[in-house]
Image (tube, rainbow, N blue to C red; front, side, top):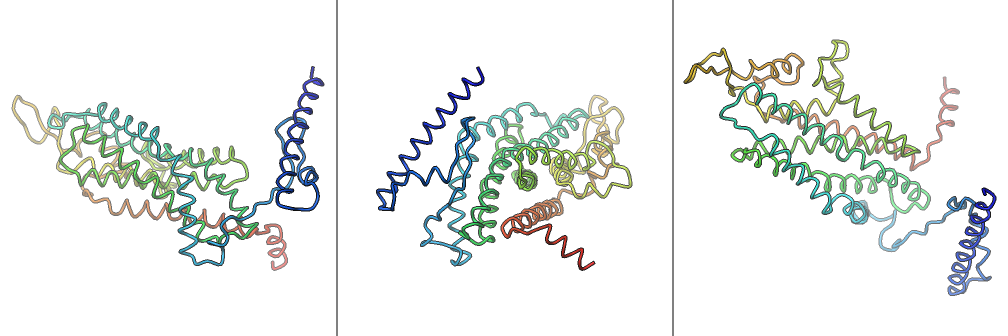
Amino acid sequence: QRSNSRRRLSSVAASIEGRLDRALGSILIERGDEGDGTDGFSQGFEIMPDGYSVKGKLTFDPCDSDVVNSDSTFAKQAVYIFEQQFRVYFSSCCNLLRLLEVGGVALLTGQLFRQDFEEASEGTISDMFALVLFLGITWTYTRMYSIIPMQHQWFKSIQIVHKNRRFSLPPVLFGRISVLLLCECLWPAAFCVICYPVMGLTGDWRTICKISLLVSLNNICYLSLGALCALVNSMPYGMIVATVMSQISILSSGVFAQLPTSIQWLNKRSPFFWTIRGLMKCVFDWSDSFRCVHGSSEIEGGVHQCFIEESLVIDQLKRRGIYDPASGSGVLEECIALLILASCIHIFICIRCVFSFYRVDWYKLKRIKSRII
């Protein structure tokens, strides 16, 4: 039975090869090339009996080289590459399915976390902290994994660019980063604009804008982390590396448990730490209070009011160094930290592409280093 299957696959492969030979030959004859053109494909390719493996060398001829090429200015190359990348990336990022996903989840989140803030209690504070965690985790993994296959294919195209010297490397990197920022920054903002009014928070649009900015920056950080992890030889390995890096980043943030003293410095290197810290500043204020059994002030019916710093949830976050009600509501420090972390990740992406673009011979560098030492 195996031999019969192999013979059928061989016949299919031979049929495909024959058709491609005839097609290539007709194209070459129309161009006026010498020969019938049927040997060119047979010499360049070999179709294996399994029916899907293809061997051979592919040649990529640059298109529109008279319009823009590596000798053109940086601006001209960047604009051309941006248009090409935007055309490819936009359909996978901005479509009706994505709109239904973001809008539907935002409406559902707003309904689930809808609260009566005038009758706030310890449970209300716990629910709002759960909302903050949900926002942070959702916009950590929403696009990090989906970017890996596209970024991996883009990284492979760097090899083609290197082979033909089609463009210079700086405009290629600039165009790619610009497309990612433009297509990915608006979705978290749209999520917050839909979610928070449904929750009843329609009065303070300044706070909603700050939350949108923090969530967008967190999304860019982990999107960039996924893009960096995709620059490996195997896409499954990129998925594994991205999973490990994101999990380490979340655990080392200190949000879920207090870190030992020896590794507390790690939380400042985690985008998740700065995102949760900034979101807590936006959601809560030092003057907020909630209904409690024993408090500093008493209202009608013997019910007391406690300041927010007396909450168990807030007290835990304060001891872990995540949030202090006395720190105010400004998020400039958190935004700057997230921008720095995202920039550092993109610097590593650029370094990896430089080594790939210019084909750095690591073994040669090691030999030179050993001779110097």
